[in-house]
Image (cartoon, rainbow, N blue to C red):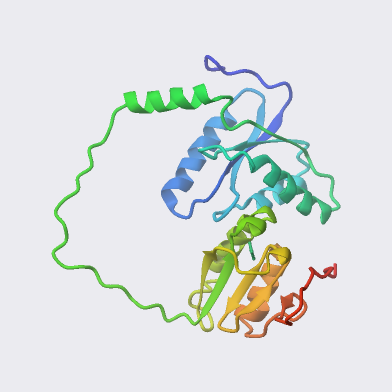
Length: 260
Ligand code: FES
C-alpha cells in the first residue's frame, strides 16, 4: 500500500542510493535501512546503495553487478548535502570512462535531483529542529593528554585532489585505493603502506595523479586498473610500474596512450 505523497513509478526500475563514503558499521546500517525503505516504493523493482569514494560497494562495483544481472533501467539518487553543482558532470564523465571499456549492454541511467528545490531542504531542517534532541554529555576534560603511536609504515601513497585531478576522477581513484588498502591489509603488509589525499602534486596535465613514496614515483592518467597494478607491483612488489610511471625529465610530458 502506498504512503501518502508517494507516486507510483511508470515501470519497474532499479534505484541506486549514492553516498560519498562510509567506513564504519553505523552509517552502513543507515544505508541499509534507507535502501530497504526505498525498496518498498511502488514501482521500485530493486533498491541498493553504493559509495562514490570510500566504502563498499563502490559505485563501480554496483554498476558492474547491475550490468551483469541485465538491469535495464537505473535511477541514481545522489545523497550529497549540500548539493554539488558539478556532481552530474562528474558522474557523466566517470560513467562515460567506465562505459568506454565495457562492451556489455548497460542499463539506461537517469539521475534524480538530490532535493527538488531549496524549500525541501529547508523543510527537512525545520523538521529536524522540531524533532526530539539529545543533550550532549561532555564530561570532564582529561587530566593528561593522550599519547600517539608513530606509524611504522614506510610507504605513502598520495592521491592528488587538486582541481584538475578532481575533474579527472580523483575521488573514484581515492575510493578504490582505500577499499583495496582495507581489503588487502596494506597497512600491515610488506613495508606497510599509508595513504593520504593531497593538494596539487605538480603535473596537472597528467591527471589523475598519484605519487608513491619513498621513491616519489609519479603516476599519471591513473584509473582503477592502474591502481591495482601499482598496489601489486609497487606497493607490495617494491618495483615501480614503468609503463604507468612518469619520471622527471626536465621537459613537458603528455599522457601516454595506455595499452588495452
Ligand atoms: S591537480 Fe593534481 S597534479 Fe595538479
